Amino acid sequence: MRLARAIASDISLYNEEKIVQGIQQDNLFDVLKDELDEGMNLYRSRVSPQLFESTNFYNRAVVDVIVKSKGHVKSKIW
Image (tube, rainbow, N blue to C red; front, side):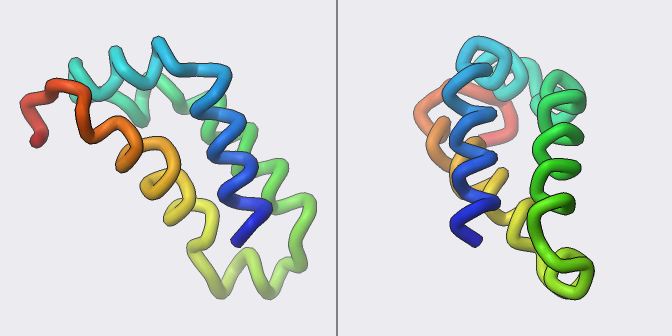
């Protein structure tokens, strides 16, 4: 879980503007597709296949670290 959160944190740190725009325009996952895919591939390469397939740590980290931390951004989705 720590690894997943660290990867999500890096994505958030280096893509602040894209994240804000994605939330405002309700297309966050489209805007960050390349970065999220790269993060998922990195996570997959660093954990055991069993752990990767049996948990959703990466997806939870994306929501917890990237989405929840931007709750103050005005959006039509919240």
